[in-house]
Length: 104
Image (cartoon, rainbow, N blue to C red; front, side, top):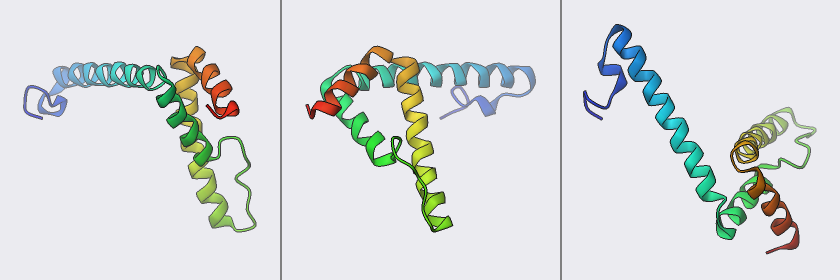
């Protein structure tokens, strides 16, 4: 980053505007990335694997409080990824479910 691309290089109202534009650009890029990931069977397999590993569809309960906290942290990250997929590529999410359960 340099003074022209780093929003923190500005002051006052200009900084606030630069931070807003930066956040909007990051959000658009993130949306495009999720849509790209979910656009192919390979990407959907990867997303399915990540959600499985994160444990989004199983309990995070454990007799050990620290193990349960770790499990819940993994699950929470998976739920955030799942929420992005559902909101940004809902039709592809349904495809992923069908493909994932059939082992494609």
